[in-house]
Length: 318
Image (cartoon, rainbow, N blue to C red; front, side):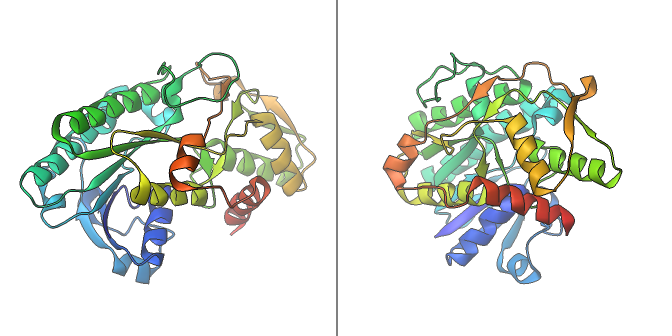
């Protein structure tokens, strides 16, 4: 299968590229400026096995070149990918996440109309589109979308844009709503590696307290390698026009994740709320139901929660 991966040099993109190459697929990685040099985590041989292409989602360059040759599938990962970054610059998040997605889908639909390609396009969205929801039940794909952050809003709008293209043109578009995920090498702008780093530093400095944000929210945390497996499974089984939650279906308080990391690091520490790390609009409970994904693909996670945390901790030590 010939697969185009946008954002191939990002955290998830690197794991996805490796998995696709391991499965003997042909991979084109679309990245900013067309350079694979930022694809840390990929070996030189892996970078050499990928065809690299330039992709700018800010409207400065056309995207037709991405579909000049046959493409069987697209996994659209490229985005302003963190809530904190989107809050700092909402306008750019709207341009990249929403308008950029619409432009990519338009280029794919044009290639289909002209007989050059007929790809299945997997648009990677976020559980943040659900917002606070109602109570503590698991979220279903048909739930009403109530985003309460610039990031969630841009992702919800990108879903609308993508599915409109499916209805209008027949391009096979699938939405993957990824719940929170982590793994070795993730940026410390995300909660698990950030907590691990602060706990490690507190132990080193012989401090008893670790500054944290709000640790009461409950999250559905997956391993990035399991998330990538779900994406690959959907490429072979998903129905156009469908939306799938990508999640374990299990909730954990961030306070429990903090405690688990402290045990792994053998650190006798306690969290200390820091107003500078608090985030307005935190969603109290965000857990998904993976039933539709499992029914369509047979997918199940293979990495335990403890192993995922261990791998995050070990990667930082390296």
